[in-house]
Image (cartoon, rainbow, N blue to C red; front, side, top):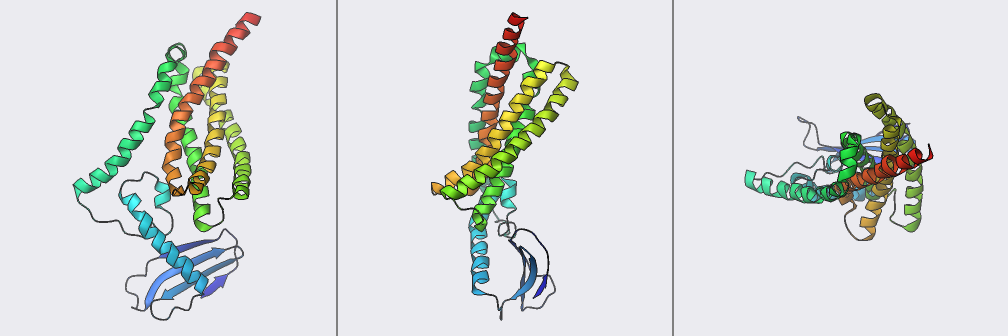
Length: 278
């Protein structure tokens, strides 16, 4: 076993044995703990690992085997499929029909959920006709929300899997408080960049303001939803890893609603009020 000083968050990474190695060699276990980086090789015959480490490794391997089938069946959450214990599990061999069926169910479910945004767009037809800028930047807005929410969801999912986060009231408050601050900073930064982007293209300060406010609200709501959803699933007895894909679909629909409502308020009602005053 070799050890060297170093910082970082605790994690365990499993690597398969090198080809051509001796039959007694097993997987290389790399532990990164606060203040210590340790590398050891687990031997199949005479491993002398602490019992706690053996339990953690066994639990990680069993969890990876049980959850890896989700990635084989088309789970679109790429970050989840790259978690330790899953990425090291080889994919199942299956026929083309079986694979198309398992993946198609995911895609069909996502298709139905994401189509809910059509009802929102239908109720704001006049806004979209009068202000084309909303349509032009709608993809940018909902995409930013899905990305921000997924980042937070993956962090919480990993924290719950490793035990650094607990689905308790105190744990949820701590995570939500920390991610709320992150969401505010991300929202302000992206909103400023979005304002410049829209103004350069469109040349209208009011349009740029409406889009940037929408972007701020979407990013903030996405971060908070991405943080809270894994905890909610864990408290309900559902696998928190499902939050990775769920948050993207939820924010696609919510992002459209936030954008249309905000732009209607700014571009229609606020603009009309400014015109009356002037």
